[in-house]
Amino acid sequence: MSLEIDGIGMRFQLAPTLEAHAAALGLITAGTAELGPPARSGWGGELGLRLSPWPTWSVRPYVYTGLGLLLFPRRPFLPGGDVYEGLVSFGVGADVPLDDRWSVGVKGFAAHLSNGQGLGPHNPAYDGYGAGLELKYAVLRGEPSKSPWADAPPHGAGGSARAGYAPGFSIDAEAGRVGDAALLAARLRGAERISDAVIAVLDTEIGTLAEEPVAEIGLAVVGHLGWASLGVHGGYRRYVGIDTALATAQLEAHATQELSFVAMAHHERARGFEDLWRAAIGGRLFPLPSVVLEVGVGFDRLGQANTFQNDHADPYFAAEWAMPFSSKEWQLSLFLDRQISTVDTVGLRFAYGMGEHLRDAARRDGWRRLR
Image 1: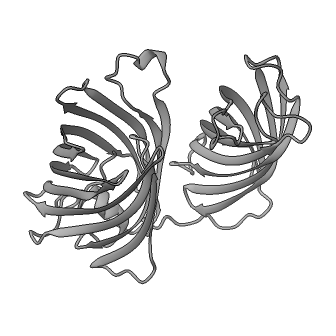
Image 2: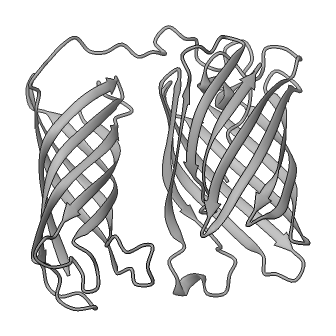
């Protein structure tokens, strides 16, 4: 079965490298799915974000993600489904300006449609990959936006790590879920400078998962090298009487002042269980001093024997916003994330001595470890 998705909409520039979009969508199907014939057409809308790391280039590469809703009033998109579908899409592309207002682009993307029966036992879904063309016209044209980091010195000037030896810390209060199990936890992280380019990060967490106590503690050594940050973390977790050793290695390449690319590998070993591996690759965006956005693809449970018989790849994402009354010494922020381990959380974070902006907590004064 194949799909054609057409859209028309508007883009709004939030920062020099970040745009939001809203679009009306129409969908047409061709062929037959394994579950039976699909609906022939549907319609709906989508909201999304697009990141262009180098907006002044002649050919402007970008990555984007979107979240939409499609309606199928005549019959379900797939047999056994409902009259509505959630649409999640991720993609990469590039566009080329033709003149002051017109530009044309190409993209490749992955799309997931789920039928709205996620709370029930039957949840037919569709996953596909595709390519597309874009034509854009600038209705309103103003002066190019100035990067919020234009006047900031690049990380690495005069030493890449924390400026002094006084420690900094952050405290999280978070709630979430793992499948049907509820999670309530508190997390404490402390960072201490070791040298001009190296810090140590203590990471502890305690809470309840499915009404059972869970605790984790770990220590990381992180090198902030200016062009990149490299960290190695070792830890221990105890849950329902099971002791688990943890190890993580992560590389964050600082492509621009606003954008980093992140790659992570994670290993867990518990007595009586198969070793577990996780991996991830994605992007980390700092469009504003008060905002962090992360999106990528995570690969979970790679150590299991049935890895290649099941789909272990899922998108991960995270967002954090520092409230406007924060100061240079401390920040109070709201965050949400879907982790590589498929844990969904929301929470409140207080940080002291972790830098003036959220970017500092990732590239200089602390460390943002994918989980």
